[in-house]
Amino acid sequence: MKMRTGFLSELRKVEVRISEVPRLDDQSLLIKVKAAGICGSDFHAFHGSHPFRRPPMVLGHEAAGEIVKVGAKVEGLKVGDRIAVEPLRVCGKCPSCRAGSYNLCRERVAAGLGGWLGTFAEYFVLPQQRAHKLPNELDYDLAVLAEPLAVGTHAVRIANVKKGAVCAVLGAGTIGLLAGVAAQQAGAKRVYCTELNSYRLAAAKALGLWALNAAEVSPEETIRAYAPFGVDVVLVAFPSPKALQQALRLVKRGGRVIVIALFTEPVTFDMNLLQEEVELKGSIYYTREDFRSALRILVRRKKDLRRLVTHHVDLAGVSGALHMLADPDTAAIKIIVQP
Image (cartoon, rainbow, N blue to C red; front, side, top):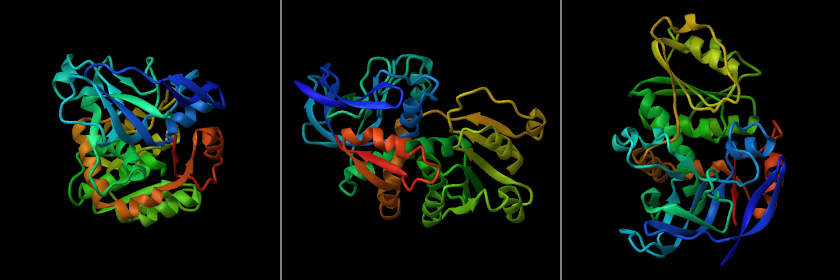
């Protein structure tokens, strides 16, 4: 059985290629991909700036679809179920996996890597443990947002955002916007969001975030006017050394800076900014708990989160969509691929 894929053959070139549909093992599912999201990691792989996603490969890891075949030992899932994809494979045996923090598994593999085809394809094979049944309220477009929202809910959880907290998110791409929403849902009373792109700033404002155009106002002066001692938590969703330095200046003494963005080069910063017991911590992927939280938030906020889905393309349109995202003034936020 054959299928079409969105294949990154070389830098800045995605082709539609025909491939064999992957075989199932006893505990896996064959998914008919209904919608797949273009992520920042796909953009960086396309342009050659990702540290480990490189051509040749089938792009994509955000996805939702319908189960069309189940392995012999699959339980609790059946053909016809609609699911959101949690695109991780882990060993299940190491200390991290046994503790429930399988996002830290040393043998962790994400879709598109390690011989696992990505989700820009007509079909995708997924371990049964990484399938999440979709609530009836969610269509496939919204379900694609579950993966990036789970990234945000995980970051907010390890930041220990409390009710009444003041937070700042640096960067309003999809991850930054959804991390801001996760902070709201955790009880933050005010969430600032800095960005340059006018369309993303408008989306942030529509989501109830305090949107700041960093080219027009000083985020530090504006935020300090409200929170003179600094904010409780800063979420860094843009991989810039300047953003990290700014985060350390914005956070209060004893506060937390959580780095979500994947930096492509080593960063230096003033260690003295940590001396006031500021906690600087990285955040990677999510756990099943975070994914379930993300689906609940999507149901609760489906009306306003739908505005983040701005464009749809087929596999032949992936290359053009990735070029579109290179424009700093792009109107695109989340582009959905429909294989």
